[in-house]
Image (cartoon, rainbow, N blue to C red):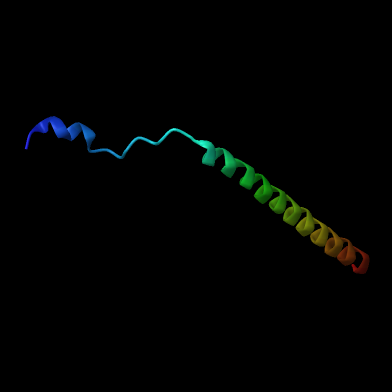
Length: 57
């Protein structure tokens, strides 16, 4: 075998972004909204329990 093929031993170059990648960006927007709602819910429950413990303390 010749040494000419040794230059192409690395991983293939990433393909150019197409329309499918653009659609996936919109899907992450819904995930972020759900995460923010979950975070607000956790903060609300934590705050309620904190205030309840302060009242009893």
